[in-house]
Image (cartoon, rainbow, N blue to C red):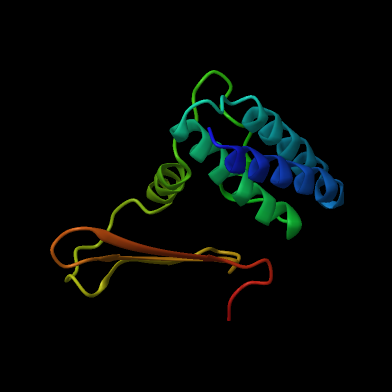
Length: 144
């Protein structure tokens, strides 16, 4: 939609192309190129698709620069379906791994989850009066 969105996307795409060959796993390099191709083929003429495209490419860029793919990039992109926004996609992935959310008070976390490999952490808290605050941290070295 805007020139700035397109230039951010192109810069991220060039950065991924520069760092993707250093991914240690051959399959990760293939999935990375499939995702880059899918995102480059998305329309950029409306705000929502441009926003979605930039969210995914920036998330992929962070992972490629850290030589570690996870989340939606562990699988090939959907072929004949539009991509949902990144937050929705990550939320759906999280709900598949945690079968239920414990009922707690408005201050206590609804979800507090650390990835099995220790590289990701998520905490979701209910905001009094409605709403949810989500905190997600990812580190290639893991958390103590």
